[in-house]
Each structure stands twice: as structure tokens, then as C-alpha cells.
Length: 164
Image: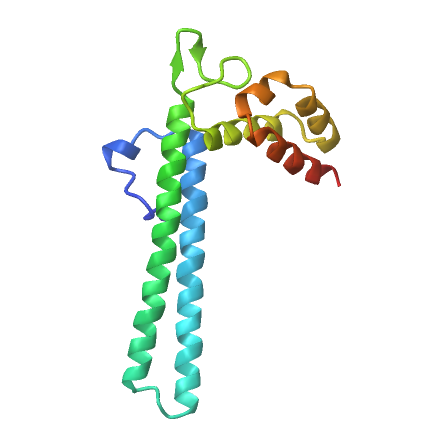
């Protein structure tokens, strides 16, 4: 897979972990899907206009430019999301005097509430594949109540959805 969603030769992205590289690959897949869908839409439009004898019209060019602009907006959103995820992942791997940040051993209180939510969610999603056990473990986690605050109930409801 050719990676062009971000420049991996850029010093900021040259030393990515395996988790971060998987994020890059997932974002690249999303980008490739967007480009493919845009090309399919342009092809469909061309054949429609060809059947109506208007394929050489300026309307086709304008419509293709509009589709390309929409595609670029979607790709930019995927790129920004990826950059934010990579930044969050790098923050999560830092540490303090107690060692590297890891929930629940050494939680990072410098994270925003939404970032804490993601850390705790990832922890519970990886701790076991049994949804009922995961929910029971989360319900007994007193640290999560204090660490997540208002997001505690949101994550509880999310984990409960997996039990159904």
C-alpha cells in the first residue's frame, strides 16, 4: 500500500510505533476509498452525460471539479483526524516519575476528558473479548469513576451495548 495521506519522511512522523503505523494504514485506506468512490461517481456521471450527448459540455468539467473539491474536503478531514490521533497516541506513551502513562497503573491526568475516555475505552476493549466480563470489570472500577467524571456513564452505556 502506498502511503500518501501524510509524509512518513517528515521528522514528525519518521519514528512511529506499530500502533501509530496501523492508524496511518487505516487512514490511508479511508483516503483510498474516498478517491475510488469519487472516481466511480465521475465515471457514472460521464456515462450519463455521454448517453445524453452532453459529455463534452462544460457542465461535466464543473461537476468533476465539484466532486474533486468534496473529495479533498473529506480527505482533509481524515488527515486531520489522523494527525490528532497520532498526537494523542504520542501523549499517551509519555510518562512521569511513576513510569509511562498507562491506565489503570499510571493514568495521565493531563489529558482532556475526551482523551481520558478514549484511553479507558481502549483499555477495556483490549482487556478481554467477553463483553459481559468487560462490563462487569468496568462497573467495579472506582478509578474510572473519578478519572472519567461525566464520561463514566457514557462509556458504561457503550460497553453495555456490546453485551446485547
